[in-house]
Length: 117
Image 1 (cartoon, rainbow, N blue to C red):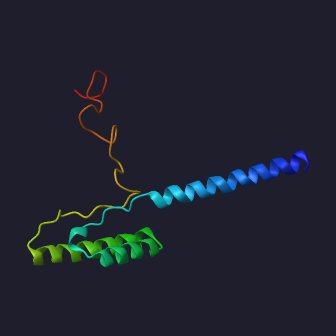
Image 2: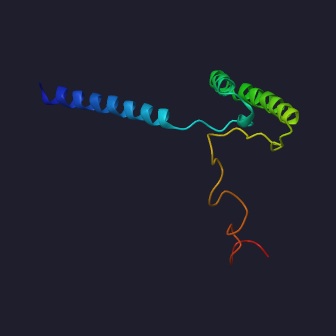
Image 3: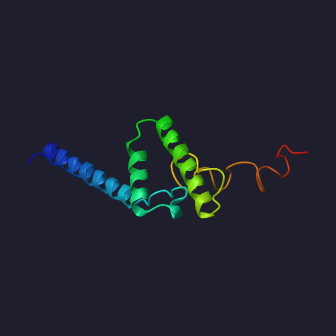
């Protein structure tokens, strides 16, 4: 095996290994919480996740999310349960936009030279 072909083989092996690890970490990511999941059967949660996964656009996912929100609000009323008024919004997952420096609040520019008077 020539040095060039050996290098090519090692590079290809590295790419394949990296792709396998990336797929493995994605498979280990826990699913996002579903609004009103405590009022749903396991089958209903599975169907909802499949619908969201199969949606082709953000607009379609938002339509599914809002339709689901209305259904869960109605189901909550029927069962005498209270759910938050707002469904979780779109985003990459739990914690999106949260954490340090995410917006105004304690410690967000309130010190000397922070622009507040």
